Length: 265
View 1 (cartoon, rainbow, N blue to C red):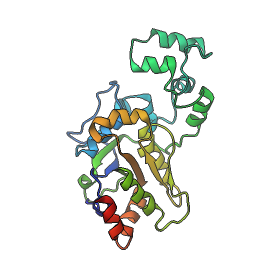
View 2: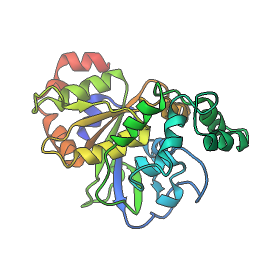
View 3: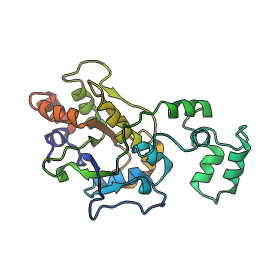
View 4: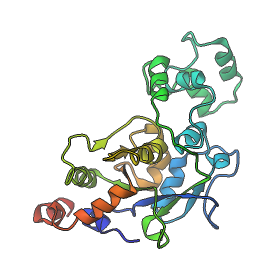
């Protein structure tokens, strides 16, 4: 499944197709059950041409479980609220969380629980974010990530995710409003990179006019992918129905003008 849009935008990476499958594809890369890892590293593998597969048992971290719809929330939202914000050391956190953090072996996770990722000002703000996350009607068995050209004929992805630099993002944002001129055709929700390429786009698919979702604004996701994708890209995810519109709208749009060709070189 080739994308005219990739060529028109001058994108370096193939778009990544998000597939919902009942079984793990043979030869797919993924984490072993119980192993820690970031889903965004697997996403980058798909952008580079491989097939990646993730299940509930191989999601890599609690954020991956929620971000890919395997769980509707975090097992201990109070703990995660401190983790995302100020941490538990000297912040008035419950004693159980302080003792848990101090008992952990040295690791980035221990540091974050003790002193916080500091993505939200305080636990209340982080908890409000967690409470506002969308949920799916049913969890998938496997989330499979493949380069768009590798999607089998007849299979429809749940979403398509572009990886683009500033010029590419400008084109995608413009195209998102090409036939839908309302000013909210693109959203940039906070959260983990997997939430931005999976959870939010699949939630958008249920809307009458699905919005595109810009992602990779999560610093943790950018650290996980910088060696594979570089430091200049964002993700831009759309439900399958919107992707089809984008492909149709290449012809006759600004993407065929001399000005656009000058921009992308």
